[in-house]
Length: 166
Image 1 (cartoon, rainbow, N blue to C red):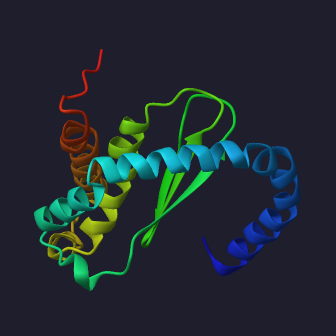
Image 2 (image 1 turned 135 degrees about the vertical axis):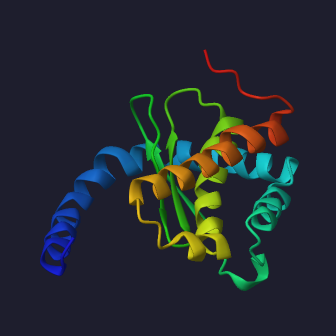
């Protein structure tokens, strides 16, 4: 995206913000905070920081040498799909606020998945693989690793079992 397109994008978002705040944010904020507090309790219960340290060790990343990783939640008020995006050391995670949601799955398959991406991009492995000739192969490998860590290993650490997909 070039600078002019980016400026137009932010002008559009700025116009959209009051509508978003009125129709979603204000209505769903209390539910989002309640879910966030439950997620924090689960993080404490399952020693989430230790899981992150183990992923960092796997990627050979000195966790003390990277900036704090922040997780920001936003409400998803309808539908069944969540979205998560990584912007440097910020993980933005959509949370279903009007439906039951498996928060252990969210913790592992979504949040830990995104944190795994962040840790990967701080690793020597990422620097070494930066010159992949086939960019799609590189992104598939990176995505597969984050999925295996989050939905596989992380989910097992939190629940004691592997997720069975039908």
